Length: 112
Image (cartoon, rainbow, N blue to C red; front, side, top):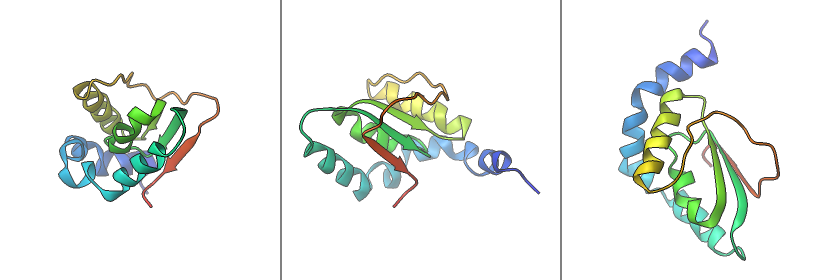
């Protein structure tokens, strides 16, 4: 029986770059909905947590509305894709897999 880590590596790592450049994943209605919701908040929220971020499209979409987005994914190649995608968009990303402690104002886990 394969471990969850092996499954993630097999299923997602080889396709991380495709996810990063996917028109479907980078322009879904969920991203616009998140921007709209956050745009209604007074000021900038301090932090958001995106669990299972994939190539980071939600994190990129909400970055202008949040002081810091912590984007987590078990796939090393997806985390690397997030780092590359952030750099291409002029956003900072450290590429680490360290969960910061503290209060998060927005938490997303999985797709709706």
